[in-house]
Length: 214
Image (cartoon, rainbow, N blue to C red; front, side, top):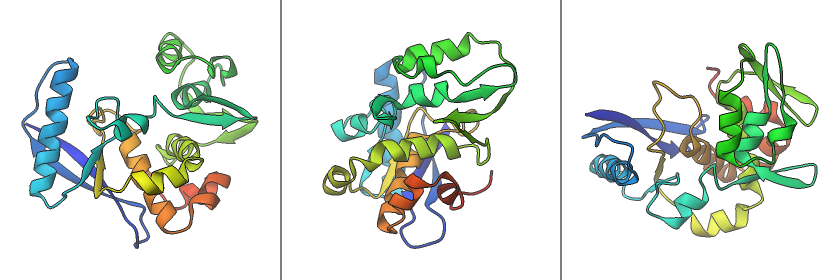
């Protein structure tokens, strides 16, 4: 058995997102077919819990819109140029002994992650992008902000094409990871519903003021 979260946009309350965990039978293995089985099992459990329309946001999604919203598919505009979201996130890291790494912004996401794995730069101390420094707290703040920045230019398309009760990311294990694209998308939906999207994109501090300080 496994337990994984489902993320629900909180369209009226002060919090941007609600999380609800569901248990299901976990299909072990790294094959894509196994991961899709887990998506199906998690969604079935969530539907029994009252959520009818659920979107998996990852490269493992059965729906094209879910794959298009994957962080590996999105790009962030930096100084008039577009770069892969994941590469911007990795390249913005600042460690005790080095960073940031603007030279990897144009890398493919997997190349950027491999570059970072091979570094021996000490402890992560923050992020730096466009000559501005960003803190580690909230832990998911900088990643989510980049994701929402990437989505903002597609706001009209998202409004027309993406309307679900809840969102999942089967690759996300909250016991091992901090960042989750499904949670970030649920935050986006809440910000849009509350007319806070533009302000959140412009001002990192304004965005993180609406997140739990973890």
